[in-house]
Length: 300
Length: 300
Image (cartoon, rainbow over all chains, first blue to last red; front, side, top):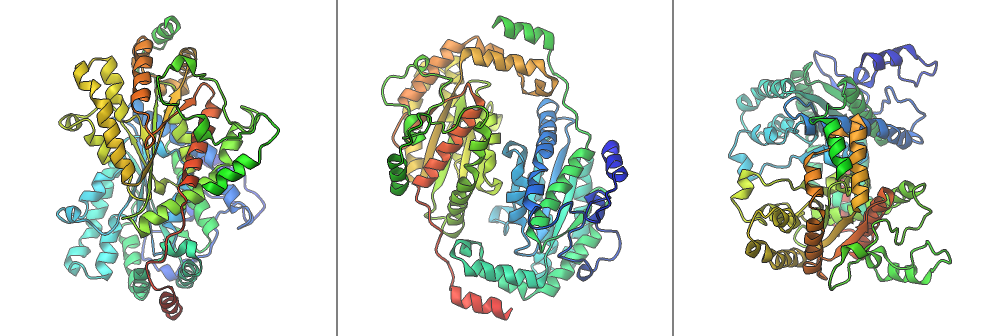
């Protein structure tokens, strides 16, 4: 980590488009009051290339290092599950912000064996019988794994709040509960990366229209998305509060400008890379006598 | 499917390395007695390139078409789950045959959202309380999904047989049970692709030695693999019987020569591609009034 950070900060490029700071600093939500309207949804902070034309290639270029680091993480999970670390990437954002696109294009670069993906939908009857964090806890990543949450515990202070599914007194105490929950996961060795995919009102409209303009995108369109869109200000406020009240050192929020898909995908992949680098992952020790096993194989 | 087949058979190349038949024909295990020792573990049937140097690139070249077809499959699963098709890729093979490598390099090309991967390990206490097919049934792919079984129901006629974990009378009736089980899954709309990764005794030894030769591979080494290796003939016989007795039209076996990793990965990806093509996947119809929704979005 130290070495990586050093190489970043000492190799300052003259190009203004070259990142001089880690993306995890550039996109980190500062503590304090959150005003989403002041955060540019079309920004390309830290992007090292030209733009749309080299976005996919620069994202793909991260694959070998992510792949190597993920294999180390996974190897530790196999060899020493008691002590192995874990990663959890939480994806939140308004409809069309690109949670699916990030999973396909950024997380898709990771070996499927190392991923535990959970898409949280409207709770099932079974899930409703339990505390809202019950299903979340069950989906936390195993040792050595990268968990991905497509939506998450935050739905319980977002849609639940805006649609008034529980009283104010109920959802209002959840922020602290979520912090406590995330603290426990972090203490158990989970690096938590919470990504808010920040898309603009106008861009959402364009994306919904695009889904209706082409029959190969109909399946992505849900009439309910327009109902939620009608409540945009309430959702933005609910997001602002969730980001503000659950923005901790052990489970920080990153605000990903999401109007440009190529930037959004690159940014999440780069955040994952930086966090994996920071975990200082080494290959696990052999859990057997190497010389003795070499002899056994030679004889076999 | 018809169109594809036609283009394959009418575009016969003069190069002997160009496949003139679909790989799903070339690698399909014929019905009748199975003699694994007669099947070349280093063959490269149907490979359209030169060899190791262009193997990874030719595998990667399949990604766009697989990705498009998988998205159609997935879209149907979302729009019309009652009628949507499913795919199940079963991976079996001796230790080091490359089940993990296939998942990483071939299945890794597919959107993680469209994959349901299950690695069947030694049954848990919970699993032991149930019929051996109980955990398998629960892992069958949902509508629109590609299931991957890393090991499978076949362990119950392989390790269970060789290690004599149940009496002969018990495992002997399982072949028919498995056929019945697979027939039901196929009838429910699941395209089943069973891949036996066929590695040679010598190549296994080389791969075990390689794992011991480099600290970044120690985690892949399991001393128990050498114990299983000592029972190679019994395992080969158990495999031969499983392949012979469970080789049906609705759940056929493909024998993948697995001594060359680059061929093995390409072959499984190509088999998946051919099967997806054969499913004749179209985009689902809209489940809403497109014109009305366009108007709603425009007003929003």
